[in-house]
Amino acid sequence: MGKIYLVGAGPGDPGLITFKGVQALAQADVVVYDRLVNPVLLYLAPKTAELLYVGKSPQKHTVGQEGINQTLVDLGQQGLNVVRLKGGDPSIFGRVGEEAAALVAANLAYEIIPGITSASATVYAGFSVTERLSSEKCLICTPTAKLVEFAAEPLAQISHGGSVVIYMGMERLEEVCQTFLAQGANPTLPVAVIQWCSWGRQQKVVATLDSVVAKVQEQDLHNPALVVVGPAAGKGAERSWFEQLSSFGKRLLYVTDQPMTFSEMTEYTAQGIDFYPYFVGDAYDERFDSLHQRWASDLQDYTVEYATPAAKTAFFKGTRRKTMSKIRVGTRKSRLAQIQTDQVIRQLQALQPDQEFVKVFIETSGDKDQKTDLALLGGQGVFVKKIQQALLYGKIDLAVHSAKDLMSTEEAGLSLTFSERSSVADVLLFRDRTMTLTTLAPGSRIGTSSRRRSFQLQQMRPDVRIVPLRGNIDTRLEKLATGQYDGIVMAEAGLLRYPLPLKEKGLGMERLALPAFLPAVGQGAIAIESRTGEYQELLAGISDPTVTTCVTCERSFLRVFGAGCNVPLAGLAELIDGQLRFRGMLGTAENCYQIDVWGQDPERLGEKAAQAILAQQKENGPC
Image (cartoon, rainbow, N blue to C red; front, side, top):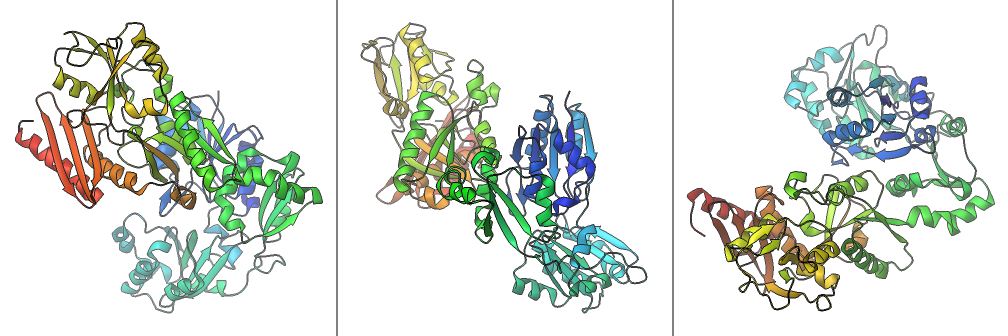
């Protein structure tokens, strides 16, 4: 039986993790960590442990808190030992209560292991937040939730003979200072801002309430940073014991082909070095590939040292390319999904011929269960959610989807690129080549699990019988050829990318013409998903502006309804002579609502079309 450990990693210096934290990591099956965790700590986990990144920054959440909670529950239900490793002390603005509540609700065993919080680590910057006589009280707070509640605290009173320690306050530093001044605080009251406190990259500004904002801008300090207001902060103006270490501030990328112990790594950090180990050759560990990618821009500023000549050779000729340049592309395992992914890889390879790309197959919930109605499986996202999770957690670098499978809203922390678009039409395949839609006998069995296709078919032929159909293209074709269905509906784009032996099997085909049979939003288009800010220049080379404009318009329409497979909804945008045309449809039990509008802005046009259909529905007008 496994257990979930909610562990504080400390403020940055890896030597500050608690002994209980080290013990928990030593027995971990999975480590779920955030961006403020020093990478050195990850090497305390067994080599068999899975490493999942769920980092959050003020402007970018790789995974939302609800997603993190669910991840912990899912892993715990598998009987694994899970370490949720969070910077500082998880009980100090670390949302550990929310994570614990989710585990309690799931009846899972857990333990909270506190860590050293940043307020205690101000000694690395030269002062303590409490000092006898000058600072005998302390308030730890944050202005991120509601500034009104923050301003209601007696901040000026506390900072007179005490310290106000502000977490996550950099985005609102100017407002914070104005709040103190509005309460009557002395403009010359000391303020210390410490960035990356206790890391070798630590920087600080010590100023006053009326000057700190300008000095922070001048020094270009950003999150993560701690703000301390009060007399004690003034002592930070002197160089601290940490800042006087001979190697303080040195950033070292240490390339080695030999294993290193945690103690050996902390010998470097104990000298004030911002230390990043990079293992090559026999010591290479592929689990750290995604970490290297996230740190790539930072590492450009590091001094590189090689443990041995062999390590240098491996870094430049072998493993470096494997770890730094290999781009893992996630996809479903179906033949059509692979064909689409291969097409994207060929396009990317043409832009970067020396780049190595590898496919990573991921089984989605829609792939695991090919019998249950898609709406019952969750409708939206059943073919993409698992792939998106793998992308967010760093298991893959890019993901390839059929655009029509995407959810109506973009996943936080991820960005979409749209490349080639094939036919947007649907086709009806028949078990006999002599059949057509108009000649089908009443009661004929037509296979589809799409609400949209079912609705539009019954608008055209209310006398046919719609029968659920799931499975990949080959499975569907076999069911048709063996007479289990008289016809099946498929996207023409799939047939163009993956030609089927229709003639050899004696099967017929009819294209379902527009506008009577409108497609799903995004149908025929390929979507490439990446973590926001990564591979944008590369993906720009295969992005199709026309496809992007049209699919953006369609998804804007879809977003208003929040719909996927659960309602009969169709939408198609086309660029015609520089004008954007959108045609949409919403089906209900009573009516069919349609819209045909023109415009320029794709987002606004899609929203306008959706609102027009909703207005029709409100008036209960005819189709």
